[in-house]
Amino acid sequence: MIGPYTFEQFKEKASRIHGFPAPGLLIGGCMVEAAKTAIPSGVRLAAIIETTKCLADAVQLLTSCSAGNGRIKIMDFGRFALSLFDSGNGEGARARIDPRKVKDFPEIEAWLMKTACKEDQDIESLWSEIERAGSDICDVSFVRVRSDFLVNVPSGGIAQCPCCKEMFPSRDGNFCRACKGESPYIRERTDLYDGVTGIVLAGGKSSRLGFDKGHIVPCETNDENLLTRTARLLGRLVPRVIIAGREHPEFESWRDDIPDAGPVGAIATALRRVGGPCLALACDMPFINENTLSNLLAGWEIRSPGTLLTTFASAETGQRETLASVYEPGALKYFEDCMAKNLLKLSKVVPEEYHHVIEYSREDATPFFTINCPADLAVARLIKKLRP
Ligand SMILES: [Zn+2]
Image (cartoon, rainbow, N blue to C red; front, side):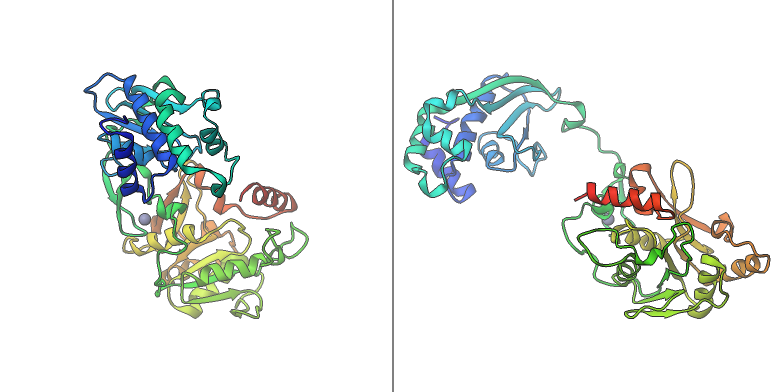
């Protein structure tokens, strides 16, 4: 028996839910029963499954836990194990297969260790071994589940994500987790931000680096240089991209009206010529990505009236990321004032009262990393190598 079912009945149930009476599901049924025996009856169960394979279906067939009622949590540890526990206090039992106990069941062992390929496995003998073994191959231990994994944790408020406009738990921060970069989809948003022009700030002399930043190829597996990468990235979000400060074969480009005024001169030129909001982006940020820029543009869409600069700011230090920001045409007069006084520090141009700020935390700071000197470049290469 597996729970209230005979082995044949359980196989039938397994076929219906899984498409096939998969050995993992049948063994999983035995594991669920083994764990259940170690838990007092009558408790409201929840489950943690430590693999994406089979076991969740066994739990759904044999307990009141389901993915839909939120009482199954799947952790992709790749361990063929599950635990059932009291959803109130987290006390319960974990079942796994004991490698020593499968020695008497060669078909199960071959299946578990994947030593036989699927075609060589005798499925009928495997099924009969599973029926014979039942819970005997399981090892059950008592566990206490961490409180943050308990199902009844109060969820806090609900907010609307400014990026995708969908509702999400506000405990996740400013944006929903999908818009922070965890989305499984390559592209969720298909429309461009029509009102914004992308400006790649490419006129810098790279004097501290000793050679041209724009030509850096940050990732060995990708032959795009930083300048092209930055421009293409913007091109996925806004309809028009201009490279400010140098020519480029693929993109519209121009020289700044006032040379040698750095990003201040470049943004002033753009605001004057475009006459509309400009997303200015430095070409020396190897980790800037589509998600970050989408978040910036989503913040820009909901900026308060009178905003002249939509920008990211570090939650810890308050420092603005003015080299990845949206500037409004109304900011032009501040640029002209500063240039007239030869004050060329970009972060000082637009007074703070006109900033619309999107905060980011220390963990989300990587996209703003900038290459200024050879040591930065070395660090960037190191990070890129460490990341998939
Ligand atoms: Zn979102």
